[in-house]
Image (tube, rainbow, N blue to C red; front, top):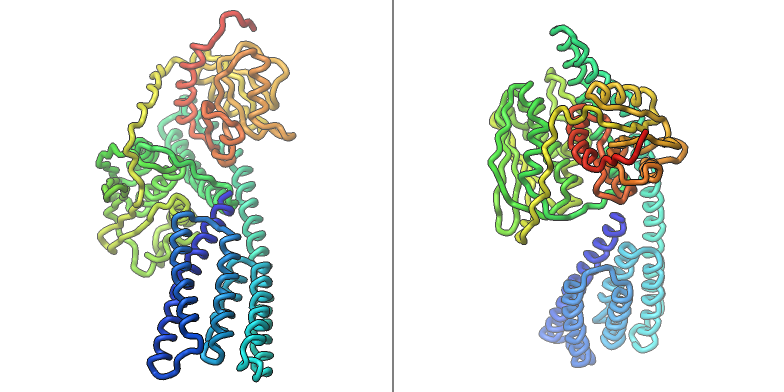
Length: 550
C-alpha cells in the first residue's frame, strides 16, 4: 500500500516537473524567435509560429495549474500533453526549417524523459511518435528533403539513444529488483529471528519475576536485578530489529488521528525513568496540552528512541522534553546536556547501524538503529527531524511540522482504578504454544492470586472464565483470533481478552479487527502484564455470570 502511494506521489511530482520544464522551454523558444528577428533572420511563417507558441504557452500554464489543483499520476493527461508537445514541435520544425533544428534536441530529451519517468511503454510510444514527426517534417519542409543524410542521422539518433537508455534502464530495474529481494529476505530473516528469540527471553523475564517473590537474600535480589536489566537491553534490541524489518517490508500504514502530546510524553518518561535514575540522569518535562494529528504508535516509537538515546549517551546529565508552537504546527524537542556529537558524526547518526564511538570509548548497548528508525518514520509521517549538537555542551533533536488539531477532542473514558488484590481468585485461561512461556506465565499468574487453566492449543471445553490470555501464533495455522472466537463460542459470551505476540502489533491489531483487545509485545515486562491484568480484572468482575458453573 505504501509503495502504491509512493508511486502516485512520484508520478505527481514528475508530471509537475515536466509541466514546469515545458513552460520554461516555450519561454526559451519565445526568446529565440525574438532574437532571430532582431538580428535580421526573421522566421518563415513567423506570425503563425508566434501564435502557436503563445497558444502552447497558455496551455502549458493551464496544465501546470490543473496538476496542482488535481494532483495524481494521470496517464491520459500525460499522453495528451506528449502528443501536443511533439505536434507543436513538428509544426515549428516543418515551417521554420533549419532555424528550428535545435527543437530536435528538445524532442529527443522529451522521449528519453518520458521513458525514464513512465517506463518502457511510454518510451516506445514517444519514440514512435517522434519518428512520425521527423517523417512529417521531411515531407513538408524542403530543407529537410534536400538533406536526406541529415534526416537519416536524426532518425538514427532518435532510435539509438532511447534504445541504449532502454537497455540500461532494464538492467538497472533488474538490479533494483534483486536488491529489493535481498532486502526483503533480510527483513524476513530479522523478523523471524526476532520472533523466535523473543520466546525464550520472554520466558526468562517471567521466571525472573517469579524469583523476586521467592524470599531471596539481598545479594541474590541484586543478581535478579542485573538479569532483569540485561533482559531489558535485549528486549530493546529485538524491538529495534522488529521495527526496522517491519519498515523494510513496506507494510506500515500510518493511522493519522488526533493525539494528545502529553499522553505520549508521559508514557515515554515513565518507560525511561528507571533507566535514567540508574545512570544518574534526570528527566524533566515542560507540560504541553496540545493535540496534534499523527499516528500515536509511530510517533511514540520516534520519541521513545530519541529519549532512550539521550539516556544512553548522556549519563548523569539533565534531559529535557519540551514543545514549541510554530504557526499551526508543533515541534517536540529533546535536549540533553551530555557530551554532544562530534561534527564528523552529525550527518551520519541517522544512518542504519551507525554508532558514535571513539577509540577506547565505553561500549553502549544497541546496534545503531534507533535514530535510523526515527528518520524513516519521520519521512512516513511528514515530520521534520532535525539535529543540533555542540560537542561538550549537549544535543537537541527536534520533531517538527506536527499539525495542531484545533477541533474539540472527546475526553477519554475514565479507566477504573484496580486494587492490588483484585486479581485474587481471577479465573484465567492461558493459551500458549511454547511450553516454557506457558509454565513461566502460569507460575507468575498464580503468584498474583489467579486461578489459572493452561492449554497449548485452543481448548475444546472451558470452565467459568473471567479472562483469556492467549499468544497470537499458536501453531498449525491457528492464531489468537481463532482462539478468541472459539473460547467465546464455548463460553457463550464475550470474555475479556489479552493477546501477547512476538510480531508487529499493528499487523496483529489489523487481523483481530477489534480495538477492544489489548495487545502486548513480547518480551512482556511483568509489571506491564500485571498492570493490564488488574485493569482487565475490573471488566472481568463486572461480566462474571453467576449462572455458569464449573
